[in-house]
Image (cartoon, rainbow, N blue to C red; front, top):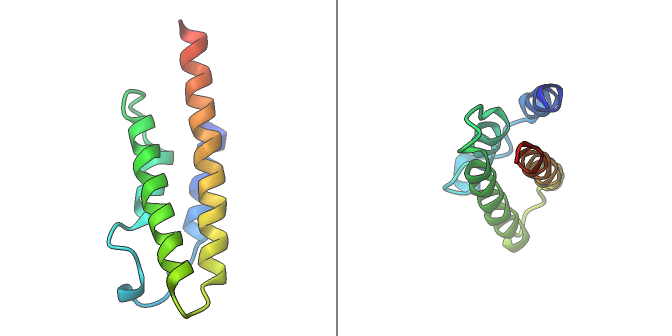
Length: 99
């Protein structure tokens, strides 16, 4: 699991800042994503994942409604959502094994 998190963190550090601040969601999906994948408190991980997913989906909707092209950011959001889903499954699997 640590390797998975390190890979996700390396990926997100490579994501560029996409566009002016006024074009971004009020909830910074990237910061919430990093918080989710770097969370070490097992009791807070699922909530962090949910927060990051919500912010990512909000930003994706904003991009969809925008008249501008944000192809790089759309791709980054898709990849982040996929990674969050994988992390969530991993956390739930580890919890089930611990019982």
